[in-house]
Amino acid sequence: DIVMTQSPDSLAESLGERATINCKSSQSVLYSSNNKNYLAWYQQKPRQPPKLLIYWASTRESGVPDRFSGSGSGTDFTLTINSLQAEDVAVYYCQQYYRTPYTFGQGTKLEIK
Amino acid sequence: EVQLLESGGGLVQPGGSLRLSCAASGFTFSSYAMSWVRQAPGKGLEWVSDISGGGENTYYADSVRGRFTISRDNSKNTLYLQMNSLRAEDTAIYHCAKAGMTTVSGAHYYYGMDVWGQGTTVTVSS
Image 1 (cartoon, each protein chain N blue to C red):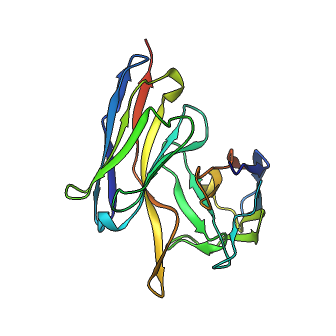
Image 2: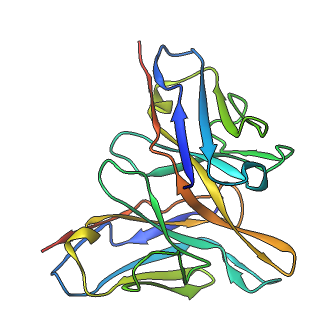
């Protein structure tokens, strides 16, 4: 199985600042035939289902604010949230969909200072 | 509007069975792979199972293989999860989710899960 490890487990940043969440996979999730990284990011707010933010490691889902951006390739990925807003308080998960089982990271809890 | 609505959760004794349903609307159901993902109380997300659009291919997490069966009825736009031999560790909210998909030069590429249901709660306890 591909193990996804996120860091940090939690972080607190001030409103208007930048938050950075890292995700590392135990194997590359870059599919050589199409040069796509099979990596997604989700946001989960309390008592809500997860929401897809980013797929192919860096493609923003329709309707997601451009404050959210994804980067990285192979085994190392980053979710960056610029100009933090109060509504960004949530748990963020990375997930690989390169091969089953489609494993998630353990989650990173983002709070506002 | 694309919607997924789960049902069928409840309280069941260890060793018992439940069948979850997920009613889909707002998209061509048969064109998309579908997933079940669960979340134990206070824990993270765990992928459980996937099924291809036509139902011919199914995939399971090791933790449920041999006990759970995923299926779909495309004529009813409904996804199912039959859960047998339930254990306390199966206690969780179960979400169904639709695969995201793009088509490039006639080829379909699935990307994660772009629509999620609110979930149905399964509690396994005596």
